[in-house]
Image (cartoon, rainbow, N blue to C red; front, side):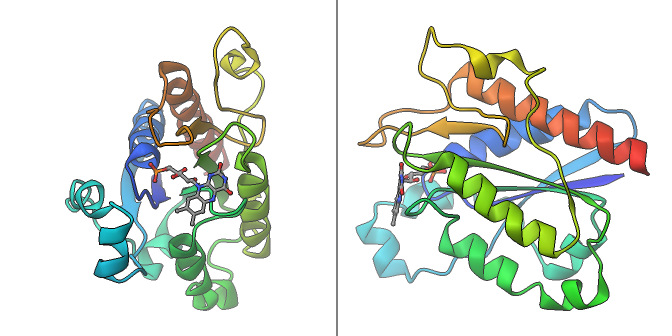
Amino acid sequence: MKLLVVYYSMYGRICKMAEAAAEGARSVAGVTAELRRVPETLPREVLEKMGAVQTLQQQSHIPVCTVEELGSADAVIFATPTRFGNMCDQMRQFLDSTGQLWAKGALVGKVGSVFASSATQHGGQESTILSTHITLLHHGMIIVGLPYSFQGQTRIDEVTGGSPYGASTIAGGRGERMPSENELEAARYQGRHVAAIAARLA
Ligand SMILES: Cc1cc2nc3c(=O)[nH]c(=O)nc-3n(C[C@H](O)[C@H](O)[C@H](O)COP(=O)(O)O)c2cc1C
């Protein structure tokens, strides 16, 4: 059972959450879980202006996902930062290059799941996850979220991401915050949950 965590992370938070999700998935017997980046779409000079060169460089050891390997995965967790309440363009462009998989029904009946990050608590994490689900549904994927059995999503003693739609993390208005332990645990839980369901289906 091969699970892919396919992500984009300009400043590293989604990358950390993706590692946690893969860790959770690997705890399920018989499951291999690997990280894949989606291709960059922005020119270097724009990335420099956005202060993203170093954080992207730190992820350069992670392979870039191909459409073919996406099609051969048994389950896929997609992870994206919020851009104006939606997935980022890098993820959009990658998904828009999967028409050949759609034409073959390559993802039909496979488990798909999404998590996200945003700068502010209410800056669009849920809309990003839910709108990404639409593409997965067009591919015929079985959507899996983050059930309330992960109780960390109900806590109010600290600021935290996480909703029944999927794990999430809050970066802060000035990018001053990294994923909390509770948010990383949500990503681990989601990874484990997706892997367990996919293993049962297989
Ligand atoms: C063009 C652009 C649009 C963004 N739109 C939103 C937004 O709608 N809501 C929000 O809270 N954060 C927004 N952000 C902040 C990003 O979501 C945040 O930097 C990201 O989640 C951090 O994840 P990363 O460390 O994995 O890159 C935006 C950032 C950029 C560059």
